[in-house]
Length: 283
Image 1 (cartoon, rainbow, N blue to C red):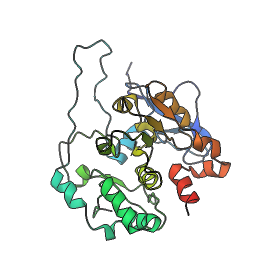
Image 2: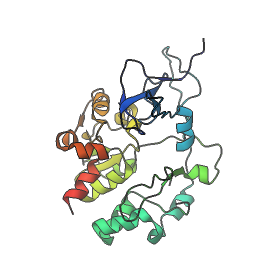
Image 3: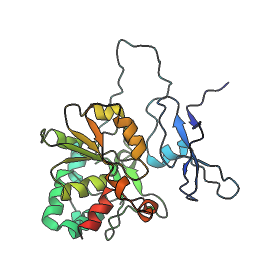
Image 4: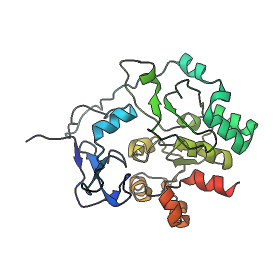
């Protein structure tokens, strides 16, 4: 019998399908980590009327990443923890990207929200660069709405893919993690998207705002790196239960339910996050 690494989740739990919006999606889980691959990776059981099916392999190809390990980990106790060394983008490439902000849709939108002085301060703080392809993760934003461009496809790419840097071991940290050493007294707040972290930092500078860059990128290992800090999670709508479960396994981490308490049905349908509320209330 073949052991598959990724299998459809058992237990009857179903989620909103990205295509038909019905709660009929069965997600894939990674049998190595027992975590779901991603919210949108799964199969809708309305096969005749919907037919949505995003496989893990298709998801990893689209995101430009891959599973953490090619072999099933040994569950037996080990004397030493074997770590895969992450690859890094050359500092010269990163520095070269920190320019041409008049061509950067996201930064142009930030200027419209906060004014140029504050927008450029945020840009510098988070080391947001400009890519001619639309350092590290490359995303295309709409300069008027500030939302990511997802049509006719999700515009996300990686520097190492664009520049054909091989071999490259991608290992993501929390977005904004470099800010932790700059101020070790501020409490830490974690959201999902990079945009939300930047927007929240503009409105609520009393926190160090970090982002997971995906609902399923939050895990205990990343939170353990924040031991000794006051940490609060601000999950997007529909991610509260999962993030609360993870936070419950790590000491000193709490979860805000502000979105769950305030969200209307319309907000839930639109998939609002913290940035949407901050922007709406500070117009």
